[in-house]
Length: 109
Image 1: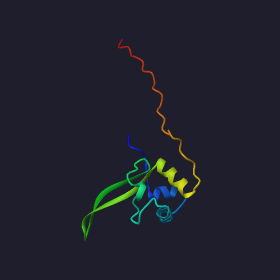
Image 2: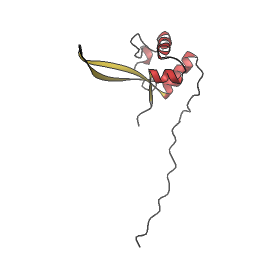
Image 3: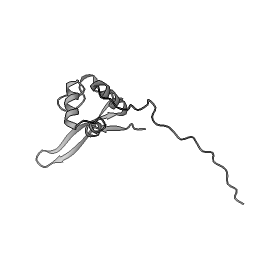
Image 4: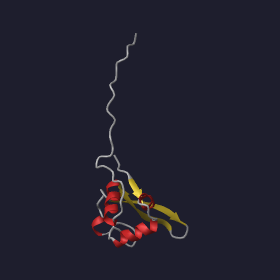
């Protein structure tokens, strides 16, 4: 199952900050580099930060690659702690599976 992620815009809204303010504070804390992609120790830590990649057509440059930083639930909790922002943290196991319902055999008569 793929984990839920939040873009920088969505994370900023959840932390009651603007996108640019959040990006500036994360760069200052060493979480993001100047390109707003994970820096240093945060590279490759898919439990906290992921990078969605893709391509788009630019009318002058042609096909262009991009990377978009996304935070997982654990990453959102981590950056809130790192930046000293109070939020309601999600429990470690926040997804619950519904209890299986018994299936009764049907009579064909």
